[in-house]
Image (cartoon, rainbow, N blue to C red; front, side):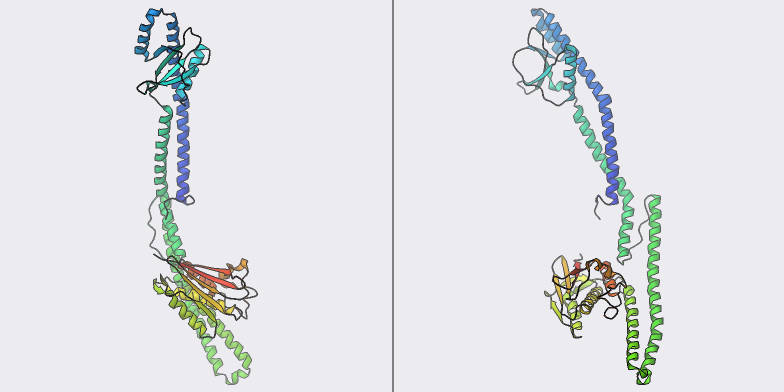
Length: 440
C-alpha cells in the first residue's frame, strides 16, 4: 500500500489537517506582524527619524569649529555618520519594511519626500544614507546596514517553514494512526472478495475503530461459514436431485420399444441431460472458486491439451503459440477459464474456425480466443458475465448454454487477479482476451 495517495482516506485526512493547521499558522503570523511587529517597526523608525532631523537642524546652527566635535558625538552616541557631499548615490531598493517606515517618518517630520541612498565602503560594508532637502549644504546622514540587525520578514518566513514542516509531520502521524486500521480492514475485504481468507484484522486504535474491526472480523467469519454451508447445501441438493433423475433415466432405458414414441423419448433424455448439466455447472461456480495452490505451470502444455481435446470432437481450431511459457498460477482455474471461453467460441462461432493465440513475455501473459460469429452488442459485453444472463438472439434456448459458463470465468479470474474481457474482432466475431500478470 502506498504511503500517500491523495484520494485515499490517509491522503485526504492528512491534507485536511495540514491545510487547517497551515491556515491557522498564517493567520497567527499575520496577526503577530500587523499588531506587534509593524507598530514596533514604526516606533523604532520614528525615533531614528527624530534623531536624524534634530541632528541636521543642530548642524545648521552650529559654528564651523564645533561641527567636528558634534559629528564625533553623533557617531558615539547614536552610531550615525553625517557627511557633506554632492557625490550621487543609487537609491536604496531593499524590500524591507524598516526602510519604508523610515522614509515615511522622515517625510512626516520635514514635510517633503526623503530618499534613502545606498553605498559600500572599502571593507564591503553597506551604508544607508538619508538625504534631507532644504538645507544650506548637501547633507547626508547615514548608518551601517548591519545596525538594523533584525530581519522580520526572514524571521516570519523561517517560522512559517518550520511550522509547516512540523504541521505536516504531526498531521501525517495523526492521520496514519487513524487510517492504518481502516487500511487493514480494506485490504482484508479485497482479499475476501477475491476468494482468500486472511487472518483476522488486529483490533487496535481508537474505540470506534476497534468496534469496526471486531464487527468486520465477525462478519468475515460468518461469510466464510455461510459459503461453506452453501457448498454443503448445494452438494446435498445435487445429490438429492440426481438420485431421482438417475432412477428416471434407468426407468426410461428399461422401457420396451422406446416407450412407444422414440421421438418423445429422445426429447425426455435430452431434457434430463440438460438438468444434469445445469446441476454440475451450478456446483462448479462454488466448488471451483475454492482457493487453490499456485504452482509453476507450462501454459503452452495446458492450452495444447485443451485444444487437442476440442479437435478430437471434430472442431477446427487454429493454435498459435510461442514455445514454452512458464508461470506460477492455479492450473485448474486456468483450464476451466480457457475451456469455457473456447466452448463459447465454438458454440457461437457459426461453425467457422476458432483461433487461439498465446503471447508470453517477462511481465504479462495474454491469451486470445477469437471466433467468427455474429458478435456481442457493445452494451451487453459485461452483462454476459452475470450468472444465467443470456442474449435474446444469439444465445437462444436452442443453441445456448445454461448462462453460467462466463459467470464462472469472471469469478475465477477475479479470484486469481486475472482480467477477462470480450472485445469485437476486426471484421466479425468476438475476441475473448485473458490477461495474467506475472506473480512475484
